[in-house]
Length: 427
Image 1 (cartoon, rainbow, N blue to C red):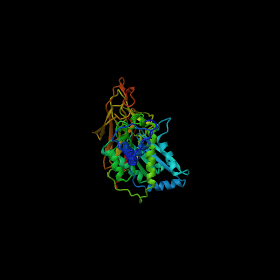
Image 2 (cartoon, rainbow, N blue to C red):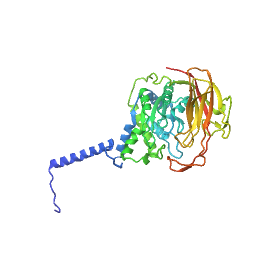
Image 3 (spheres, rainbow, N blue to C red):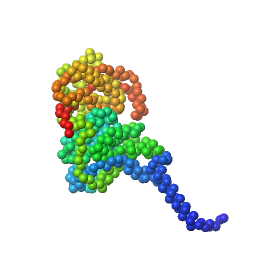
Image 4 (cartoon, helix red, strand yellow):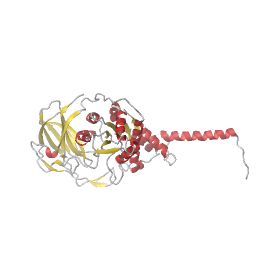
């Protein structure tokens, strides 16, 4: 009836209010637990972001070293952050990087006096074994106070890579200035690339763990967030994605500041052979060969390795030979999806292993292949001989990463250097 007011009993109003509150709580539970797919909206985006940030920190770790570093920063003393990465911290020209976002947030947190220097060893497609080899040459001379490790995407579950990951952690922790090591478990857009063995090692050393996959994938898989909002391609983040990663680091820093722990104590190694000392790195241009064979030295367009030793096609396929006395020897070799060469490795005339240059990236990513390991330092003769050469120069391939047709170049086997360990210390 027009103009008529219908009286509603008070207990009905109360029940209706309670129903609305219950419905709201139920909706939030669905949103945060991923029970029901529903597109993200302006009203609940902040709740989703909070949930992702909360999930990202899977272990706070011991906070004593970090708080000592932050106290120094608040007093205006310089602190240095090192980013060692194979994927997440690569610079994207023209866009604000994840590193810049993270450092700016940290400056806000520490105050105007803070003086933060950044040093990076970000080699796309590399593994922690390569990072471990380059650590002493490129990072440790800077005496970093914080060291962020990002190798979850390209590391394999092999024993040697577990040892290399632990080694890089121990080498950093042992430095006299007592740096804080932060483990960042990055992920590709098309898979949950979290490495469980890295999480196990990090927890064993009581280190902070920031897990991108743990934060992002519940929202993507539920449909509340589109993959394209976070990732440009399988390996690179959008601006929104980079800001999200920076917020995960900020959350860790804020959480750690509120936590006061006793002095950090490093445990004994998980893998007794993981602590490599006195690693020597020799660029290809400085390798003394007993016989160059069918190989030639050429200029190399690489930031770290200026010379390469390349196989000459249409020769008699004679091996490259050199002699060395070492505990462990690695060969630095570029790998990519566009390569398919295989090299045979002979030690004192006996074939020991093969190296396959087929990799995970479209570009040449340097990898460290262990070709020799022994407890003594007797000199050994090493021969590198090409087994198979790619013949696909005229073929065309479709790249799954960016969905464009690319020529497959003909590339002959090459290596960029060697790394060797002349003394192994076990603690």
